[in-house]
Length: 258
Image (cartoon, rainbow, N blue to C red; front, top):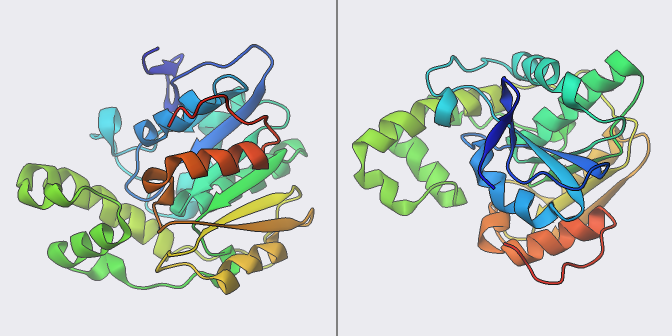
């Protein structure tokens, strides 16, 4: 089934509608990422879940829209757009910067409705209180591209296509600034279980910085170490799916879809 928006809402992509009444999984992309990156995950979970993927401004069919300039602005806009579509207890999943977006949207949901997500799953992301500003947003284009490629966040061949760079780098630079300038409010917590996924070869995230998610989860947190680098979910898709199904309490897939 092809991609479609939920009604006229530009923030939501539904690639593979799941069974009626199935649990809802809401995905938040990484810095520079777009909704289509999570199409394989949506397909893989479609037997058991309804997956919604957030589409931030400034990418794909929203390329002409201005990007949010702070995490608060991004989370406010994302929650306002998602709110009418959220189930009573959705599961939130976020990778890298998307983990912080998911965390902040969950906090807004709790303040607004008195309900928290069923679970928050955060991937390859230091805890809100352990994030540091590396100043990547100040790098020149070549240096920033090198940092992105080191993490595996873009195809190595993109460097030979100036027209693609012109599209990718401004979006990435703004997202990086949003992530780097984020500071968690004192005592920022979510009242739901938090599952943390730590890639064992991630150059940017450590065991110490992810263990600190426990400080932000009043219902407890677990840390799972997985094989791979920062973008392990693309390089080790079967293992990623296996861990997601276990975290969500789903039966093993008969065949891996990604």
